[in-house]
Image 1 (cartoon, rainbow, N blue to C red):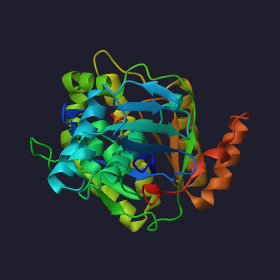
Image 2: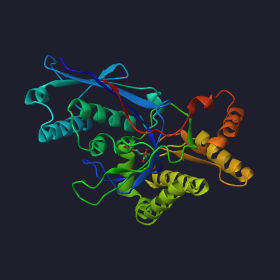
Image 3: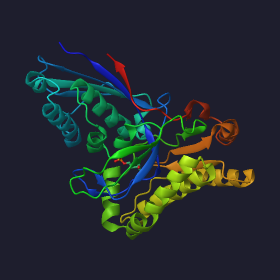
Image 4: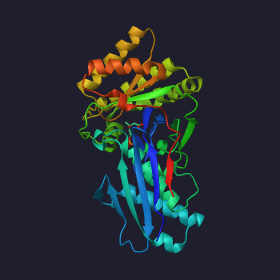
Length: 341
Ligand code: PMV
């Protein structure tokens, strides 16, 4: 028999977006990115893993449905964990030979496509590291599952350094500040659509890297400066500066997607309506009170300070009368939690 290890891991929503890879196999990005890790109360992945001598094959269940374990990303993550375990001699040879069963679920509609792979892989890798008693940093292994997953391993605000080494040893995530640094910071998720994205992030990034002139400009001239500026804004708790950079970076990422050939369109009319609404709200407030950001889909993540929450929730309810925005408000997370044993 073997213990079952259960872990929950949070999603993260980038304020400086990762879009474009310099190495598709190792999942090495073209540029640094920055994100906030959100509290697990509204969105998280939960994964249980177990290795037993009587298991005949590696197997995985996602949200209750058995899926193939053949995906190269899954194989890479499990393979790398086992290599580390062998190098660290953390478990016996016999244990390493056992097959593993994985059971993973999201507490958030996966169809909404909001950073579920980031939480999922961060969770899987953390659970496997615990199962195989791996002590070294697992963020770079989570990266092999889904690039942005390397940021979900830490809480608070996190930076993923693109790195320059061809083998990716310096492409790692580090924490900028923990979740206690800016407790007023909140995120409000607005689910605009729950259809699967038309172009996966892997394909979208590939097309952008091959065809977008704007992406080259972004990587060289925009992201390095923005990254330093937003980190300073986070450290100084300068919300207007943080919000302005967040919105500009989201807009530029979607401009890059449109500049790709053929173009990738992720935002919808409702997404653009929300952009407009937030700019009008900020103008009426006399300063920047709310930031929006959109990943590779139509759903909005609004960053705002606690004082602003009741007003913005009323506004959203007024504009979208059937919505329940109060169910999608959250603070930042301190990182993944190991639930058992
Ligand atoms: O890690 P992936 O392959 O799911 O790509 C994530 C891409 C964005 O969410 C759009 C940006 C980001 O930095 O999270």
